[in-house]
Length: 80
Image (spheres, rainbow, N blue to C red):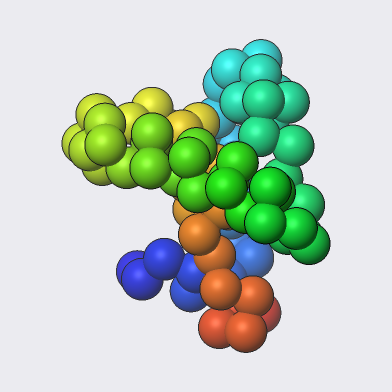
């Protein structure tokens, strides 16, 4: 499945496998939202780079979920 091409059932399945406390901590650090400034873009880009450098096989499910969220393309979202 390509990044950003998710359906609602797949997202729910992934969410059910996450450690809630760890996921909350990552989300609190990232504070994901619509990027509106260059500063916000740089913050997200740094975090994406940090996660990508670890390598997909080394990411926790929570880190992978955050990376997927930060790199999702809203225009390509699938809905059931």
